[in-house]
Length: 613
Ligand SMILES: *[C@@H]1O[C@H](CO)[C@@H](O)[C@H](O)[C@H]1NC(C)=O
Ligand SMILES: *[C@@H]1O[C@H](CO)[C@@H](O)[C@H](O)[C@H]1NC(C)=O
Image (cartoon, rainbow, N blue to C red; front, side, top):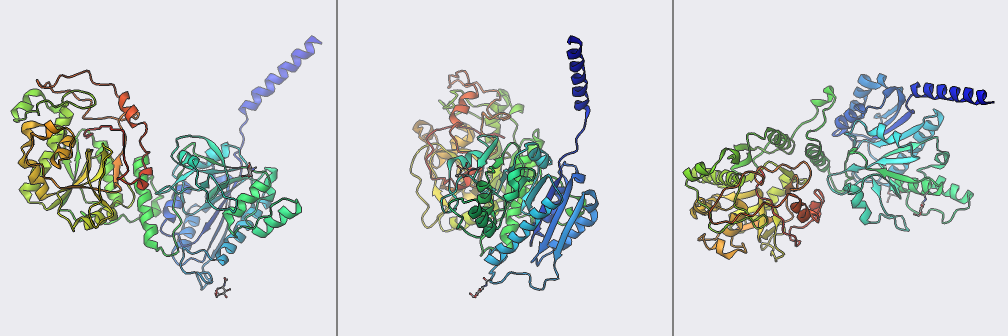
């Protein structure tokens, strides 16, 4: 008896050992692509589909393209010729002989008349049926508006082994491919949880009432057989199973699908476990292709911000991508201040300028690391008596001195070259979408009033009233603020800044500017500068933000950590550890959410980052 048990154990061990060595094929996936008038995004879309690391022989494609009046079907056919053989199979239909490329009663290609809904629903039903017929393990509905920049996207989703899951996608704003709430009459409902998931303040897989645009369905899950996009089928199913209430909402594939899943007991989930990619926001009926093209620019710029670069396209599609023509907008020059020893920041910014279309001149920053007390003295610099950093209680650092000198030298150049108006950028900024057109609008609004300086990005320090500049809705009179990430400065403004001889009583440049427009609370500092008549505004909302807040992991500041200058006036305390900054910034709005934050909102927590060059 004992022998027998041992024998069994040995067999089990052997079997387990074998099982570990066995390799399983990945589950099969039917990739469903419905395309209409997407020529402007297909090169990106198809490149990222092709770069998915999921084995292509385990992917079958179901592709339909109809009602298109652009090059969509040519591009798809080109792709199929080049890459079709890589996939298990392709089931396609191109309906471009169709003389009428629009639906009945359609006012624009962004219009969704019932006839269009019905057509798309019929196609999705066909795709579902096809997946059942070929016994696909999964069906992946993917709209051509989705840029799956993560090559792991499909692998990561199938690995979750969930009945229905959507990869969370980022848009240029707050739009995404899931809802967190639904009203009783099937409308979108705002929830706090939505933003937490969207901004990855919590990370995981979440049950939600609606997912769309990119949805993976496990066809082996028993409940999947009842899934439908068709309102009548849903109603019929609910009546047959005597479920109440029977759906009486709109003929809308997304909502019907969500209700059919719920009715069949299949939960819908969204995952934000990896950065899957991006999606285009649906346009309004009155919008034009121009809006969509601008969205592509915004998304590509976000890829540079988030990923360092736009992930490469398939070679034969590369030539189809046109970057915007570079412009100085209405400035005589746009300068970017950058330390030569930070080439990675310069390269990233230059990629952004390419994507956004900005003609920017590089300005080599004065490096605080190359300064010492002797050189500072040789340059004739003296410090403002009594200055100390209000948060760290220490005198100016070499980095802060270098930063001041960098800005100062640009002001000098403005005067020497008699440049009427200049935009000065630092190199660690994140542009909000539509930067170019927003800058132009801000400048246009400013035209009616004399001004010397306009902040495009800043940190408000006091909860004080900042009235609108009369006759404008994008400009405020600026209060006490920090940072010099990006500002417009006029010739007259530069003259005013130089006239007070700031190098003879140096303080950090972002303390100096508020003194010059006379909103600095420290009156004894201000008194050293006469006249303080700089006319300063701020864009509202702001047009850009710093890429990192100090205290975030991975943040390197070139100004704060550098060696301090010993001055007689200041009694330098130990600098506070970085973590106290973390406290200060803990309650900051998340980056990216800021497009909806009016610069006029009070910010009570005064944090401080001097120049991070
Ligand atoms: C298009 O509009 C006309 C007039 O309003 C209407 O009679 C017709 O039913 C509409 N067609 C569709 C498919 O909605
Ligand atoms: C169906 O919807 C209800 C109400 O929103 C929800 O409580 C329930 O968990 C959902 N069921 C499934 C399987 O998702």
